[in-house]
Length: 232
Image (cartoon, rainbow, N blue to C red; front, top):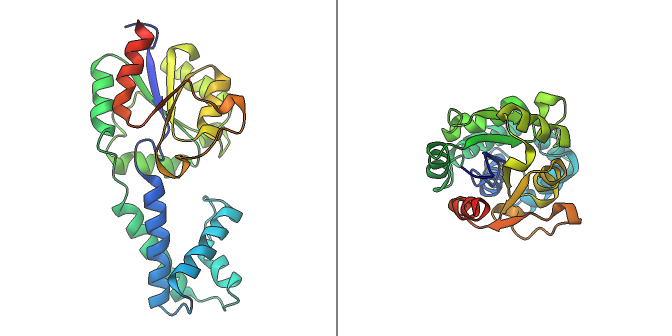
């Protein structure tokens, strides 16, 4: 084994198609709310819901309450419940790993690399995703930002992740689809960064020099080419 000793990953749009999952879940939620009596057409309702998610953030728990409010409608528990049920069921149905996720993780382990997850968000929620994806047991270390008291990435999180894997930052690769979030903080911490072009961040431009990844790939399997070139 050469320079790299650990390979770490973001979760959303890296291990599974979170963008498609979110889009379908929101669409099906509006459809179910329609059937329960929400008087708005599907496209218009979806647009308003997207705006609310943008305004309140993805971790907010009352998106559907705000939707009724914004449409000038009375609070309706039946309509909101219909949205919640459809959202959860669709989310679960689309929580499937990309075809190359599990083979790549297993091969990395077999080659002797330490593998980890470094993601932002709420710990229980992110662990739920890993368990449902069937990959939670594969990683040597999982560090979610909330474990260190923040719901968003911090440089400290990456430094702590390297410490837990018992490697230096420069001996670790970080793979993420988000240039201005995961990649930015991994770069600041001194990781070798790999941007995977997937999901809604596909066309996102780096907003600063620190958001530019060292490498860009389109599938996880390409990580082995990068490892090979780094070891030469």
